[in-house]
Length: 209
Image (cartoon, rainbow, N blue to C red; front, side, top):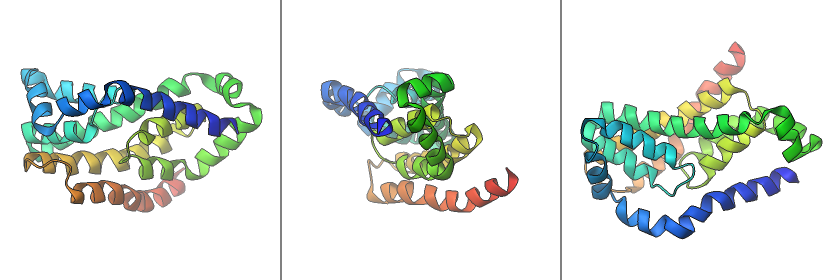
């Protein structure tokens, strides 16, 4: 039960910045706005883009538009790499912040039964949670934090995160290079490709572990 309440608390904490600053940031970070903002960093635009994607953990940054802007500035390959790196770094930061609380901290927050149940759940389906949630708003940050708190295998978490971050990064970089905003095809591919990749990678991971 504590897992459920913690999930709701984390969702609320992620949503609060949207309530206060979401409209302002969404108006500022259109595709053109994101390109202009990153352009202010000159040759360090890639670092600004990665920083914005990591900041999406606590701020309502439209990450897909930032990824598209990186694609527009650097092209499909380099821009895709930076976009994927930013998405991966965002999930990694949330995971390790919560994992750093340790087992004692997790038990204090979740209770012994909740912690044991959470570890079993994330060991069994944590990878699927990561790949199925990454394209959605709010949920990627929450799932990363929950995975860290429940001490999901670091290797499994980061592998699932890569299966999500890499296709998303390159898909939106391609869209950005073409100068389009939020096309339906990009949303469909960023939602559909990660589970397919995980379906292939997960059995290989289980055999090797």
